[in-house]
Amino acid sequence: MIFKPITFTHMYKPTHRGEIVFSVVKKMGITIDTLAKKMKTQRSTLYSQFDNANLNYRVIQRIGYAIAHDFRKEFPNMTKKEGEHRGKIVEAIVKKSGITIESLSRKLRTSRNALYYRFSNPNLKFKAIDRIGDAIKYDFRREFPEMDIHLVYGAKPVQDEADEAIKEIPGNTEVWKDKYLRLMDKYIALLEETRPK
Image 1: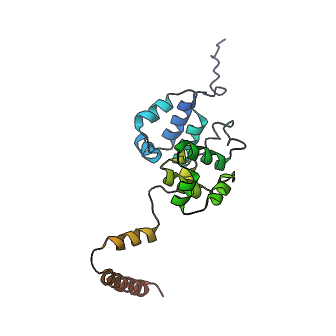
Image 2 (image 1 turned 180 degrees about the vertical axis):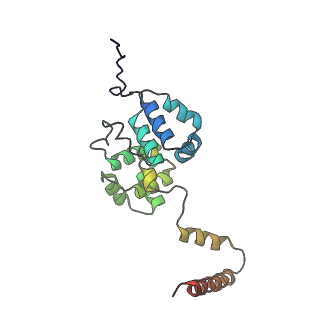
Image 3 (image 1 turned 90 degrees about the horizontal axis):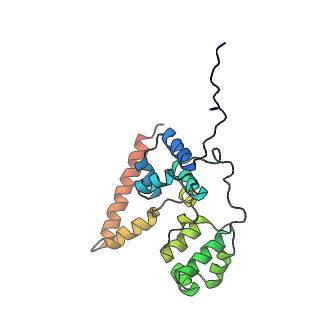
């Protein structure tokens, strides 16, 4: 009678969180350099996180947002903190920054009452959080890694860029505006000519 060794690999689930996250990143074909750029961190930091057996769920969540993967499949216990109050978290950080509510309201061109109203909102919008972060020069993605999915950092609205470009033009801005409008008219005419009928 021949005995086969019993293996329990089908029952074994690795518990090293860093290794699990690393294996998912590798399976998705994402390089460490790409992930580091998306997360705006260094490769060495990522490698040290992948070596951590008890990797923080917030870090895992942030990596998940960067690679567009929901790690709750691998970590069912990882859920959003119940009762997380975004407004209170932002208010606490504003107070720690040393900036008064009055000066912050001036920077944001809003009233103090409006700021306090925002701080009382448990589901404060990420756009408002980002504006407050810009005003106090603080990156709220540390507290809210899910902001990456909702905001595009470093991107300004097109109209703002156009206004800034016009301000930088030396001399007569009307001349440049006229040239722009003529060029836009030609572009629209070209689009209409090439449009299938």
